[in-house]
Length: 245
Image 1 (spheres, rainbow, N blue to C red):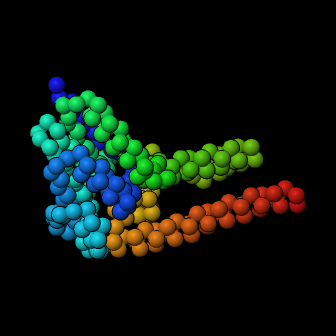
Image 2: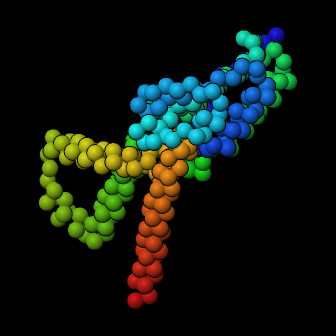
Image 3: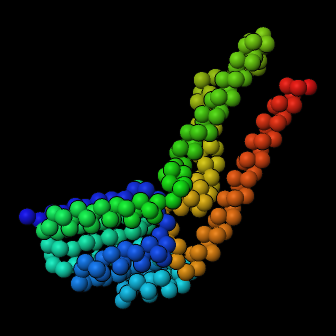
């Protein structure tokens, strides 16, 4: 009897040195043959002799690691393969394969791997999954909300007919305006989505020079969240002052 499972990990991952050391130690305890391979953003492929070479890798922006694979094997029936990558911009950030003849060993390895991937999941996991289309949908919803409020305002102030007469568009013109608005929103969403992916990376190898990059990302996040918080407080206080006045 042989137990086997293949599984994809779809949550965001921040892989630190201690995480790689932990999983490498776990694999070397159970398998005689262990291989570590990596791939960089410039398509350079590297075969490491041990995990310390990985943690000492300079990892510059021009040659940073985007994929790490670790394989442990005793035989064809007793093996473990783990790959961590998001280079194809798919939904998954990691994949693993476990094969074992012993049910107890199989379940133990599966449980430990699930714990490891759960521990590497960052707090912003949800934000890392939002796509440009979600941003577009949000902006369209906001615009629809503004239009609805404007319509109700005009209706209750008795100026609806007067204002509507000024906007006497034909059907083709309305379709064209709608297409232009959607196109402009899409164009706006592209840089917004790029900023989101930089601020909340779906997969990040916190190794070498990328540690400094992550510090820069965290600083920008703090500034952005501070601006949003201050803006919210000001808007609330302004609303309260207007009511008092």
